[in-house]
Image 1 (cartoon, one colour):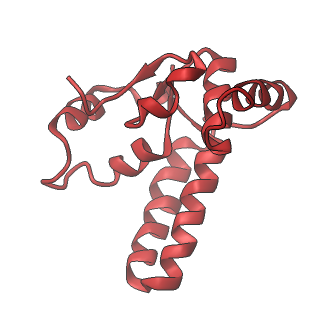
Image 2 (image 1 turned 120 degrees about the vertical axis):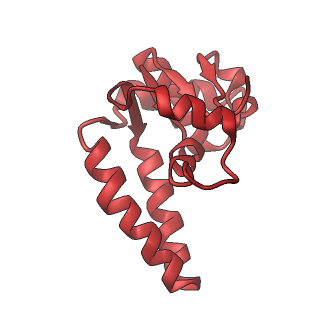
Image 3 (image 1 turned 180 degrees about the horizontal axis):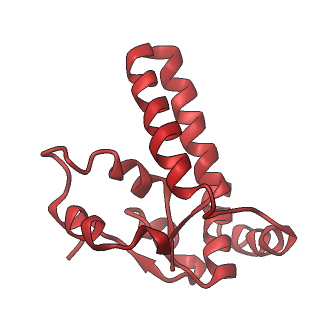
Length: 139
């Protein structure tokens, strides 16, 4: 099972764009999305980004809103992992020795708690957490 970081979810939107990484395309076209989950914090990060974009670029904000509401939410609605007290405690343990971003700490703790592989482009941000990592942009 996989927990998708926000940067991976965002990259799916660009899958058919010529600038999309060939390594990512290969992985994305072969992964079973039923094995992929999101953290509730990824939902927060996407929504936050869309709200900010809607304030500065209405047209692009509308494109992102449509993508999120018509593709992402229906695809993942039953595979969004919430934060519970166990994950909150694990997050504190990860965050204290390594003052990483709190969001990254929560996402890392969620992957650890569920024994999922965290799929991210930013593996360096999570290396100290001891979570299984996969970067689909690399060979």
